[in-house]
Image 1 (cartoon, rainbow, N blue to C red):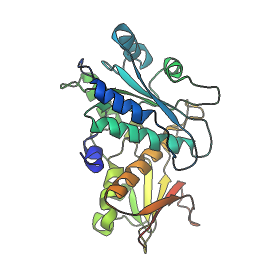
Image 2 (tube, helix red, strand yellow):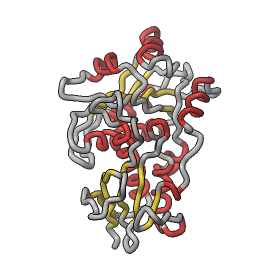
Image 3 (cartoon, one colour):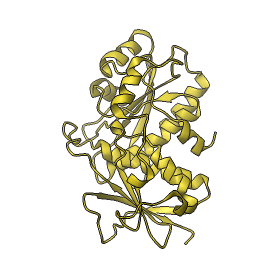
Length: 282
């Protein structure tokens, strides 16, 4: 399965089957999850794949995730020290691990505000200097999802995605970017549209340069959503996920380019600048 295919089939799962994940898959996922890498903005997020059997697994599913997940025997836990663009780097790196799990036929669900951090902090050995922005259960999705899954999809609007005209623009926020004007990057933008986000808010807004295949990424913050999370900025994590989808799709399509943090002089009202993809073929 290609990266783009993986992005298209990925979906959040909260109810897991009793089937054990094969040791070979666990070893591959653990090796990838716990490997180090150089993210975009210089932060150093780290991740662990932890497993729990029997009664302990049931306790994690029920109390640690407030009963919003059932049947999961494994969790991806991530930590990062606070700093400029640390949340974006965290989301960028976490989503790579989510997609690797998806490519192995496993279900996941990024949880940023619906779990008790204490037990997961113990699982990763969280230091006083670190934050724990999100975790994800990992396992085989149950063939028939529970009412819980249906309820959350309804609440979050997960079954729907914003149309292109609400997220992607040409030159400025006054002109929607049509798919046929996105050229070779159309699929990259579609992969961003399919990215997961907290409560499916899809906070990314992308403005394509009129003359070049350069794409400016902005965050449109949801009013009031930051309350209760302290230094953890979940919508900034969402932006990192969007950057991940765009870049992975571009690389797979053979589109050369690089990320830069060079904000255009004209800032759109109500948006926060994240980064720009500079096309390497211009």
